Length: 169
Image (tube, rainbow, N blue to C red; front, side, top):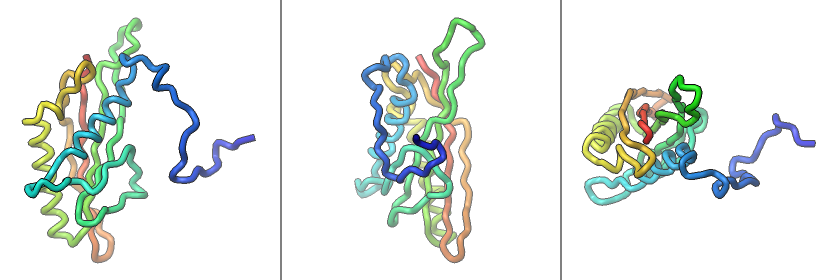
């Protein structure tokens, strides 16, 4: 008998697949999270180097780690919202979150996080691929952005969180 409280290894492979059984009209969470991750992985800096050292699915504040001299991003779906219509069981919009994290000395890490935040805001404003996903997301709004400093002895961590709202078709 398996206990639900038992600890799972960090690299566990789940033993179910339901992608083939899930109709595309109902795969909004999977589609949105993969879309956001792909967008972030495709960003480059001024020298055409990949901007993020790593982009992860999900977020765990206990395991935030830097990745060399590049920021790390975690993306996740946070909430699905519905109308009050009893006949409508498809969400109207989906909320997601992007967490970016940098480690370094306080001044440099904070300044670089501000630079990264400005760039991501620009992407959502100017880049249609960051706002719309064919037949799934009609438009994406930035609902909130927060920058937070996490001091830890001489090395600071700076976290930036984007809260997004995706209006669905």
